[in-house]
Length: 295
Image 1 (tube, helix red, strand yellow):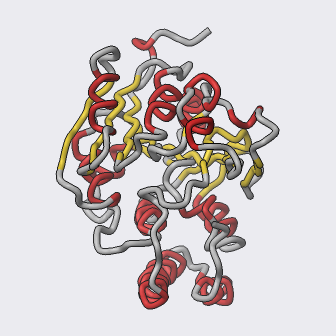
Image 2 (image 1 turned 135 degrees about the vertical axis):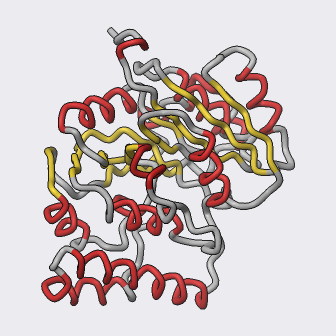
């Protein structure tokens, strides 16, 4: 049985929305159905040209936990930054509009954060490949069916995650990070729970608005500098729907890739120098410059 909201810290779930009409209902329903009830659900319409904004407004009319912000298009980084500025929760959680989360996702994340006093909880996730042979209407419009496509044998599902269940200090987390420095598991924001007070206390913990790729990793590397305690959750709580053409699937210019990797390399170097681990992990840090993300 879910606990009463009064006994739960507020969690702000931030959802950037851009031309997500085919997926946004599935996403919102998965958040509304969380066993954890004390939520602030922030839907930020980033200048969508389809009916995404109207769908968000309709949900706000039936769930008072939902806040809808309509804004001109400025990209996913600026949209997430605005969401964090407007949020009131003790914790931040992020969901992309074309994905969905397990019903127990927020409850598990908060349980582990509260019990271990973790500054960040990182969880395994599922990557779901939709059956390309099915018509779009069969894939995306029936909310009850698509809420749990991992039960549908026509979907290809893979679970990703590297750390074993349990608490970690910063050194242990940094050691794990260097085993897979270019992975989604460490790089993305949507399989993690963050303490909002750390973000609010440091102006440099933001999504880089001048990056069109790996802005999540930039945020995470900035955040990790100020975090001390971590918890690894081995239960997959997030369903990453691999949808080419979505707002978070950027067509990358090779020049931009090199430039972004060079920027992030400097953050890696600074972080590991401060931990006194740079010389030990120098080969892995340099390996990042040529590593290929699992996407």
